[in-house]
Length: 146
Image (cartoon, rainbow, N blue to C red; front, side):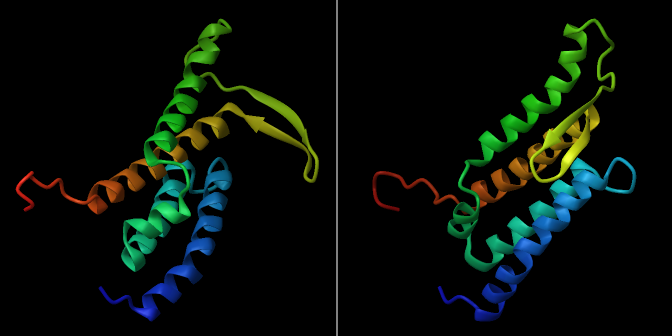
């Protein structure tokens, strides 16, 4: 199969910009439109561009972690934000706020809603990548060689 140099070049140019935009939407989603779901969809669109350009092999190359691991990790992270408040005697999905000090950024506030959005972001990316994984798999052949 011949690959289009225009599609390959476009995929390489768009991919990283789309990922940066998806991260912006993830982190800006609490005060502006966006959030984990929308950011995940934009990252999924970037994965789709790679799938169109080079098939499942290109998707696997840009995503070193298997899609079901990403999806499962996001699900555990999102569910954890619901369960942890219960363990602490609070209501389900009750908001929490903590301040952390990061080496380059300094002191920043981290909310439980941001952790939940990060989980949703990972679930959406994992689900989109699993769809392409299913589309790109080689069909199982019978023993007769067909």
